[in-house]
Amino acid sequence: MTTRLFRNARIWTPVDKGGGTPVSGPRQGELSRWDPGALVCHEGRITAIGDERDVVKGVAASDIEEIDCRGRCLVPGFVDPHTHMCFCRAREEEFSARLDGADYLEILKAGGGILSSVREVRSASEEELFRLTRARALSALRHGTTTVEIKSGYGLDVGSELKQLRVIARVARETPLRVVPTFLGAHAVPPEYEGRADAYVDLIISEMIPAVSEAGLARFCDVFCEQGVFTVSQTRRVLGAARAAGLGLKLHADELSGTGGAELAASLQAASADHLLAVSESGLRAMAGAGVVGVLLPGTAYAMRKPYAPARKMIAMNVPVAVATDCNPGSSFTESVPFIFGLAVLQMGLSAAEALNACTLNAACAVGMGRETGSLSPGKRADFLLLEGETPAILAFHAGVPPVFQVYVEGKVAWQ
Ligand code: NIG
Ligand code: FE
Image (cartoon, rainbow, N blue to C red; front, side, top):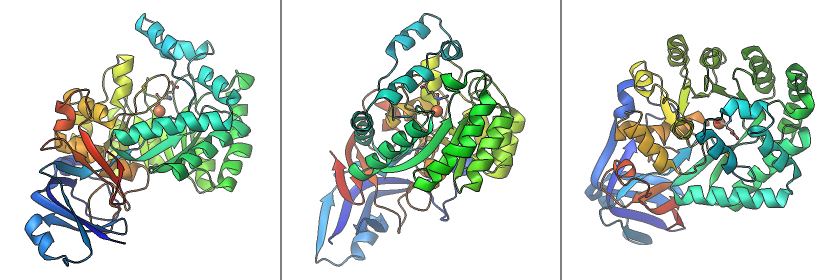
């Protein structure tokens, strides 16, 4: 296999101390930078990176393919650590109703929202669901995502949850993307268990988690811990069973109301607590203490016209901050990390450096991939982007137009 040398690039990357640990506090705003920089990869892995002159000196001239980046900005491929992109159709009529004042959780209570997506996923064929999900994954790739987490959660019965997870596994096999699958059986209480949430939790624990782990189809288990959905104690039961089955833990925590989800995530040492629009100060302190990554989803606050999560406060309190699209058919219908990057910078007040760490290294750590990807460090996979711009800030500046020129996965062009 040939060695590739990418030269004449403006390189920006997280400062990775190794070991797959996220950056927080002042370190969230630090990046390594080389201009002009060069990167070498061999067999899909990064073998050298740094100042162009130093890097070029270190490589043998024969059997090397040289790529002139023409001064473009070179950054790690994005990691999108929270999506629900395995669904049939986006609920556009519901978006319009919300613009006219309808409430998200009221729509869900009336059998719409997540539950209308559940009806569609249950009746869709596996092939159809695969085609729809693959199309969204490839759109994410065109927007610079090279690793994506995808949740189930629109099946809510054993067979339909497994169908979603098989579709997600097939997306991993049949696209260039790296996919992290998450089981989200506790996304809503399905209609056949209406008013019997505890009995549904029993089903998750006694049948779904064993079936999912036996099939090896999930790496994480997530729960929508929210007033009127799953309580803190139901969440604790589900995640306890998930941990015993060998799954990593994640929570939709304090999204619409502060229920103590962040505190629970910290006490369980979950990989991440996500959303956090209504997180308490004690929840943030607990997360910082336990090293739980806070995955912020500003696309959801944007589309729901809610106040954004307290990102600056989180950085001040040493909570490692990641961002994600939350790509789903209801509360955040986008697969574009550049759009999320723009919201993080212009609406949540992150610096461009903080936002780049949030959608690369910290995002990778939130899905247990911090040793493999998320920064341009020797030994890691050569997943990176060339941007039409000089600095990562172009992602926020060129509003609504992703400046992604080329996407590389394992050193090879995956999209241009
Ligand atoms: O993360 N909060 C729960 N789940 C998704 C929304 C799913 C949907 O509306 O279909 C979220 O916002
Ligand atoms: Fe979500």
